[in-house]
Image 1 (cartoon, rainbow, N blue to C red):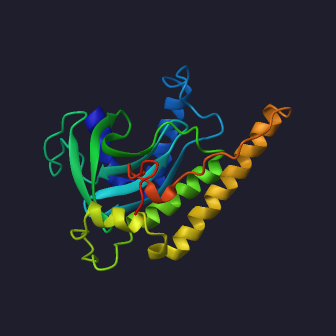
Image 2: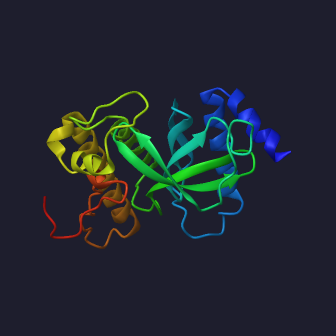
Length: 227
């Protein structure tokens, strides 16, 4: 039964749970997503940095069509300790050290209930899987690092998304991470330029737009906006 599958999730190690998620979405990529034209063929599936935080398992899932922050409840909705199942598509707020984030409820057989916060979709701006997973890893570092002056307890109850926005758009507040972000952007720009030359060697290749990794999670600033 589906419910039994969900109840067994609490018995899985983090590595087994990551493998289950990756296997599920690899199957989805080959089946119901196969004929939908939003898959980046250069990318695969990877569950990054899955860890338990409070009453959820948290990590970033990379697929050829999206990169999502995932929240998977330790106690499945519908189980004795999990509360009632949500409505698919309903929002819920989750606290991390960097702030609070809204996830949208979803359900997959073999995985159960989970909440997703979209970071990138579609994924065509990634030149390769290396750049995609490195972006996910750096994003996790930022998500689990509270902005200065907003550090709280291990339950992640302090800090706000506004404070996280401030930290994300200030390169000097995360020097090491900023250098890593810049390295990802430079490598992807070079790979994209090489790909364009290979596809159309007779054409002049424009310098591709760098991804603004400091404006993840819907925090991209419009052209001409400063500060």
